[in-house]
Amino acid sequence: MLKGKRILLGVTGGIAAYKSAFLVRLLIKAGAEVKVVMTPAAHQFITPLTLATLSKNPVATQFTNGENGEWNNHIDLGLWGDLMVIAPASANTLSKLAEGRSDNLLVAVFLSARCPVLVAPAMDLDMYSNKATQINLVRIQQNGVKIIPPGTGELASGLSGEGRMAEPEEILKFIEATFTNASRLSSKKILVTAGPTYEAIDPVRFIGNHSSGKMGFELAEALAERGADVVLVSGPVSLQTKNPRIERKDVVSAQEMFECCMEIFPTCHAAILSAAVADFRPKNVADSKIKKGASGINEISLEETPDILASLGKLKSKKQILAGFALETNNEIANAKTKLESKNLDFIVLNSLKDFGAGFGTDTNKISILTNEGKTINFELKSKSAVANDIADHLVTISPNEA
Ligand code: PMT
Image 1: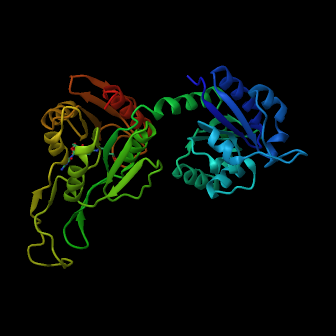
Image 2: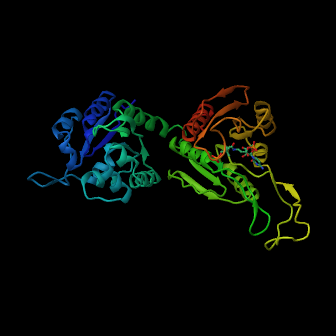
Image 3: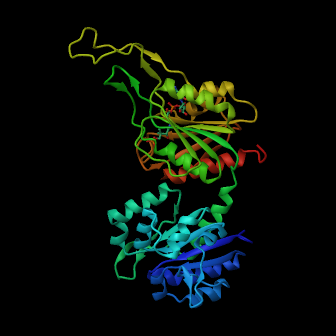
């Protein structure tokens, strides 16, 4: 799978650097070409000679090489790689990556790299859980870098906890998945909706719901990782997107979300609507704040909002794929099937508030995918990120290659 792929391996100063030798061997065995860049501190844990021998390429550490002063051109190195992986990534290097510093060759190469970058953190548990490290990880991810999560177990310090670098085999799987995923939905434009909508009662109050937007944002990331150009139409949430392939459009009300989606959908390959759109809105919105004791305040007349999913279902061409979510509390399968059919969907993602850990606000979800061919695929409770991958993978399987 990695035949001919050019992998830049960054090695930083940490005990897990010894595992880099195994990673280089796995990469070479898989057919990749490997160039290693080390920080000076990494030399204390593994010799450049070991990594040069295994990678069959000179190892670069300094901006210049030895007595002849030959330049290790960080720009050329950065442009050479089809993928860069930094394993192990120490807390110190993570902070440099987050700040965009370039005071050693490895971080300068990182700044120059145009390819996808994976980072495998490795450090002691307290350093890993420290707020500063966690903030750095978030910042790095916001710049599109993918983190290979560390494992939990015995650490070099003798303590036990989270921070141990992922095993080389696991890192190899991430690398392979990055190449497989990158092209699976490339050149496909996909519309995703996320979050709640707010329906104004007056300038101060609104009717809303508990959606945090997490499910929809994870879905947008999973699709973008597979190469799709994602337009994410989001209600009011406090989340950030990470992948530069995601174009975000913020809306507040169901009407705004409707208008935005109707405009975008005709140019899309697919749409997956995960937003918790308000079904009703106040018929009349007061111009100024309604005062306590105002006449008629014990009643708010409501009207239905436009059904975005059903409207897209009417617009949908034969080449387009349309999917929705069903959030149910009872008769789950029957209700989801009705939505699937009545809204002309290719599939619907069912989640039930009866399932522990599923639905609003949680970091996890438990879903079933019901298809228009009558299939039901059930999934375990998983992180919303893993759920998003399952949904994106399902979309890949039903997407024609040429579209
Ligand atoms: O945001 P999180 O906190 O992560 O929570 C995720 C979630 C629970 C919001 C998400 O997983 C989910 O279930 N989203 C759909 C919620 C919902 O409104 O379900 P519904 O069964 O009422 O609606 C069915 C479908 O019609 C949905 O795709 C919805 O986006 C769409 N719809 C609904 C009403 C409307 N006026 N227009 C619509 O397009």
